[in-house]
Image (cartoon, rainbow, N blue to C red):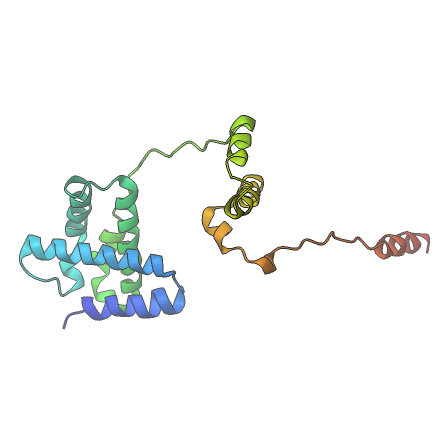
Length: 190
C-alpha cells in the first residue's frame, strides 16, 4: 500500500490546516515544494513516487541540488523547501514508524549557510526626505504620511501595517488615576 499520498493529504488537512492553522501562503509554499519534489522524482526515475522510501535522503538531497543548480534558487529558497520537507517527515514519523530510518536521514539533511543582510536604518536626512515625499494636497498623500510616520517610529512590518484597523487606534489621552497613589500612601501610614 502507498503511504505517501494519504500521509501528504493528512499532513495538509490535519497538521497544517487543522492543528497549526497555517496561513494560505504557507500552505501554498508547501504545496509548491511537494509539486516540485514529486515532479523532479518522476522525471528522474520515470516513476511516480508512491511510498516514503521513494523520497529517501539521497533523492531529497538531489532535489535540493537541482533547485540551486538548474532552477537558480538561492540558499534561502532551498532551506525553505527543506523546511517544508522536514515538516512532512516529522509528521510522517508519528504515523509510519516503519520508515523511521529513512525519515531520520531526511530530517538530518543540513540547511545551507547563507549571508545575512545587514540591517540598515535611515538617518535623519533620509527619514525627512521620505516623510516629505507624499503630496499633502492630495488625499493619498495625506493618507501615506501618517502611515510612513507610524512605520518609521514603531518599526512595524508592512504586513503589520496593512493589518491595522481603525479600532486598533486609541486617540484619547490616557488618564492616570490618583486613587492608587493615595491608597498606597495611606496604607504605609497604618
